[in-house]
Length: 116
Image (cartoon, rainbow, N blue to C red):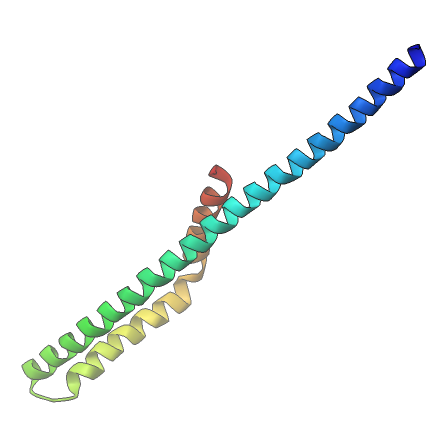
């Protein structure tokens, strides 16, 4: 009788442990899915914002180049000035921007990943 009760308790414990392991694995699957979807939606949102920002910068740059060309009186000078400005920004970012950009991305990504 006592042996049967002990056997039933062990069987019940085994069943409960399997249920716990299954529930735990399902929880971590859902948690991973949640984090992956947050990352994917953030990536798509960032890409869309980047595309529209690039379009805006291109149009404003062309308009500014035309305005500078008309003010100087040379048809191509405005384009060279605007291009030189962007080249100067590129050089500055290339020389001094790696560490601040890495730090910014690391802080933002870690906050998003570890806070939720």
